[in-house]
Image (cartoon, rainbow, N blue to C red):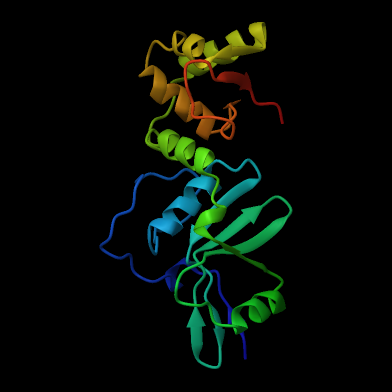
Length: 198
């Protein structure tokens, strides 16, 4: 008989290994990365505008006494899915069927499928995930964007007065107040900053 539980208490204890960057934005629950591949996938999840939240190894899938925990349970506005990194050790064949029986999509990600530019930009931004942009700096930048429609990163950094400029800008990107292109090239002074419109 198959059972799936989303209980955080069911997650396995964290290993002693540390994977960088340390901070996350949308992780709900304990950080339990299996390896650097899982950490890299989580970086991509944190900058995916469609992702509401994600948790690490929080949904155990079982069959006949066997238990398997995919790397992530990802919540999107249009539903949930399980995401797993592809490793040398094969995922049990029954995982797809059991996840499907529970109404969950199971998706595997190979290291080669991770977009390198977006991953590098995500890692750079997540170094500042623990920062919170003060209200005055946030309002100042949003007002400037309302007036100008867009600024370059170099121009936007000048606006910050209460916090470290790059930390403030990165925090506002990660918390979806503003948006930049993460895919075309690495973030630089000429990167265009726009106000996020939902």
